[in-house]
Amino acid sequence: MAKFKGFLFGLFLVGSIALNIFFLTNNLYAGYVNKQQLSWSQRAAAEAEAVASVSCSGHGITYLDGLFLDGKPVCECNSCYGGPTCSHFLPDCVANADSGDPLFLEPFWMQHAESSALLVAGWHRMSYGFADQSSMSQVLQNHILKVHSISRNAITKGKYLVFGAGSTQLLSAAVFALSLNSSSLARVVAASPYYPVYKTQTDFFETAHFEFQGDALLMKRSSNSTGNVIEFVTSPNNPDGLLRKAVLQGSSVNAIYDHAYYWPHFTAIPAPADEDVMIFTISKLTGHAGSRFGWALVKDEDVYLNMLKYTQLAELGVSRDTQLRALQLLKVVLEGDGREIFHFAYEKMRDRWEKISQIVSLSKRYTIQDIPPQYCNFFEKVRGPSPAYVWLKCEREEDTNCNAVLRGANIIGRLGSLFNASDRYVRLSLLKRDDDFNLLLYRLKELVSKEGGANQLIEPKLIVL
Ligand SMILES: Cc1ncc(COP(=O)(O)O)c(C=O)c1O
Ligand SMILES: *[C@@H]1O[C@H](CO)[C@@H](O)[C@H](O)[C@H]1NC(C)=O
Ligand SMILES: *[C@@H]1O[C@H](CO)[C@@H](O)[C@H](O)[C@H]1NC(C)=O
Ligand SMILES: *[C@@H]1O[C@H](CO)[C@@H](O)[C@H](O)[C@H]1NC(C)=O
Image (cartoon, rainbow, N blue to C red; front, side, top):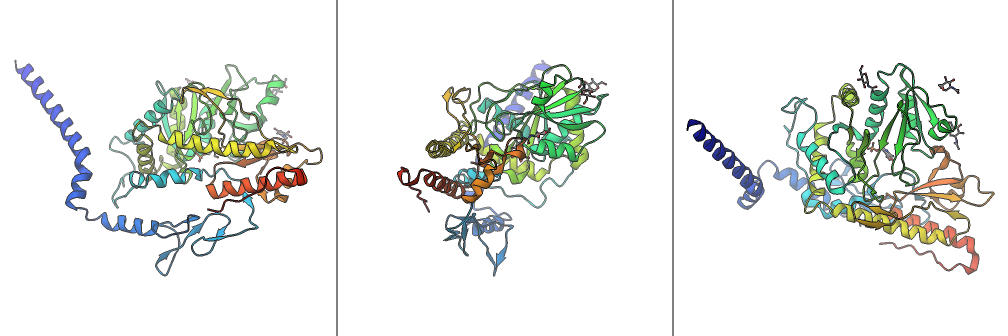
């Protein structure tokens, strides 16, 4: 009887706590706002809105931590715009399609200004650890798992999570972890064309346990993958946007899957990824490269523990402020049915790809990569390409340095040899702001129309908004 009473009491207690939490989370903000009880946060909110309200003509932004002149925030203009309010277009400006800065998502976050804004109290998470003494927010972990389940891009069940300062840190942590207790030198490889950081980072941090060996395809051809091998697999690949699988197989080969771009924004998701080591980043998911936040999903416990140890020794875990920011962003991603950002990003990237494809298709001198339509697990249908980069090739015999050819046309891309490919290729970024993309399109039109002489059908037209 006593037991039953205890049970009832327990039930009541749990129910009452749940109800309280429900009412608190639903009415907390509303109650405060209605009664105008905001006190210490008012000034910060007013300051944030005052800075954001300064007009930069739609071609620049002001920041809280930017420069101020006579107490007024200074506009940071988009490339090719100048003047105090960024209203001045610089006509001879070069189209810079070099970096992979994912600013194409800025408009999404401006549309969600209210839900994505964050106010950080002066005493927020001052401790080294969370209450459970860990360095990873449990709530953020839950949100990450939810984002994967909605985008249907990875199987998270039975995997450990590690946070990193961007995926860049986790790429290095994974190499350390996979080579730490191997008896022979681990050889690190990637199939060309590959993201250059795999080589530069591995070379720079080289230890007695591992070294960068070069092209995985060469290793496969020489049939010499004896001993411990670590293969970076980027899927979809930077620079060419193609889905990839490890080139090397065998019991001594460990793959690190870099899934920075494995989101519906950039590729069809044929099936949820289920690899032993998978690395993701908010940089290309939400566009917040500046926040430096990535995560790894790791199957093996020892590898996980070694990666965790790496991030602990490097910086005692990821900044709690960064984790708070990432949490706020993922809350917005998960709003409603959690699909809005994927639709927004996919449509924008597809539109950019189609516009570029259309221009290049009129050319005899330049070609771009072919990405076949594929079934997508997220959209539940066959869908076309929407890659992060154009992998442009100069087809003319004499154009052995394609980047130089493009530079002559006021376009800056990234040279093929940086990706261990031929300099007949140039990578052009499609991730930048609308202003940058529009100018790239304009310069490409100029380039292609010159090639066709008077018969060319298109006329370059720059849409200055
Ligand atoms: C393939 C690939 N991996 C990793 C990164 C780095 O991302 P993060 O900002 O998470 O360090 C990039 C950035 O361009 C990338 O292209
Ligand atoms: C490291 O060694 C332990 C046992 O000594 C083994 O269980 C584990 O799989 C090894 N890890 C790697 C990454 O080789
Ligand atoms: C690719 O890298 C290998 C070394 O791993 C080098 O020998 C080769 O010349 C490079 N290829 C290109 C096209 O840069
Ligand atoms: C295979 O590679 C290892 C490590 O680079 C080297 O020591 C060995 O000589 C190579 N074997 C053959 C048959 O090329």
